Image (cartoon, rainbow, N blue to C red; front, top):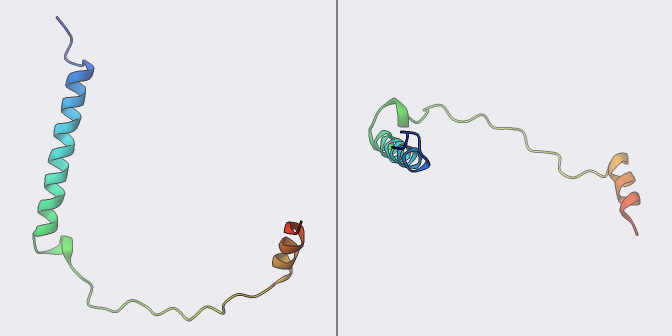
Length: 67
C-alpha cells in the first residue's frame, strides 16, 4: 500500500488549495466593505521632475560606450 504523501495526492491537495484560494479572492473582490475601500483623500502630487540632464557621470558613460 502507498503512503498518503505520494506525488498524486500532493498534487491534488495543491490544486484543491489553489482553487479554494482563488474562490476566496474572488469572493472578497465582490463583497463591499473595507477590502475594496477607496480612499477619499487625493494622492499627494509630486513636483515634476527636472528631466534629463547630461551630468559628468553620464558624459563619462557615453565616452566609454563609444566604439
